[in-house]
Image (cartoon, rainbow, N blue to C red; front, side, top):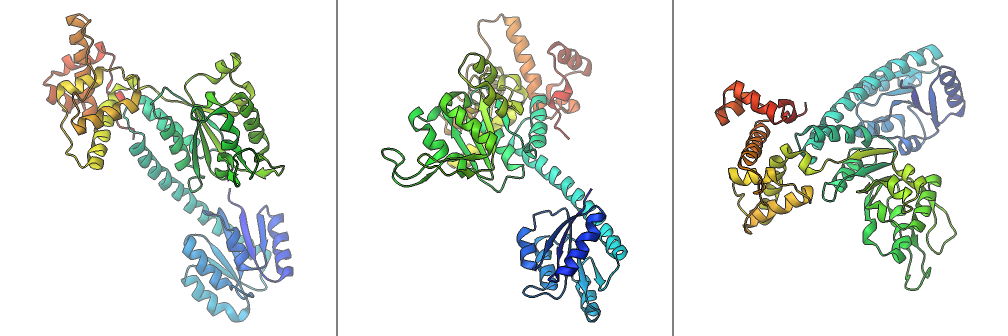
Length: 444
């Protein structure tokens, strides 16, 4: 329930009386003696109402209204006016003010106007949230590509976790897109306009790790020329992505745990504590708790990082996504390199669908770029030649079904026409290969 009110009036007696009335009625009240102070504290998508006097030193209530209209035309502003200001207030309502109250006003009149304004604000914010969710969903669909059930689940989890103030651990094989998922968690959350800082824990020598993470003062150690801001401090307000977190030295794990607990840090060579507000997203291939049991990772830090966990499916477990991903990678490579997008033949597509992809999405992107550059065979080896002829025929048939269903997004009629199959035969083959139409439907 919305109950926030920002009250702006240069008369302390008015502010005190209004605060008493509203607090007794369950409102959350913020008081300001100047309009510019109110604007400085006004959050984006403020879940409340502004109540402002018209005549004040410095910025007037009408100027405040104009500035609020620039920021959010649907934020209700109720003006408090003297008797001679009524015509001016009526004009202000034409310019966007929600209501005006003539002094002296009764508590009942004030409460009635505020409750109506808050009801309107609630509807506006709910409508915005619905539109924003739809926009975010469309943007995420275009970023985390895939029609498989696993990708649909992953996108849903990313949208749910993006807005929550919790640390997230991403589990996945090398090349499966962990940093892209971390970036989505940042970009679709409330910290999107703050820094996203990525640090690969395996790429930093142990002796330099603390300075990289915490920063240092001038002269903190040999070669420390000038002050340097560390990754933790640089990410203040935003997100720090720690890739290959299992490679972090144990000594630095202790210090990172302290930062997470106390929300403050000290640079090397300094005794001054610096408060930081950040979200940690960590990525790992192994199970951190197993690493902890083996003595290679701190168990308490593992629990701190793994408030929520996202598991990225390997590419071999979502083969129906391969044609869409390949097309996207090839198209972007062609645009970047100024080349023509080459067509993909049926045998090449079959090879793509049958390969195990140990390098996951990163390997597929490399294959697509090589195809665009015309550097030899564009796809890895296809069906295992060591299989029997019957097994190879079965594998190829399953690939053809997957490819057609992916191209037509689960439209069975279009697949039947393309493959020239009777409906009964199609159903039998789908059942034999463990396929279902729902696996290939675009998420609504």
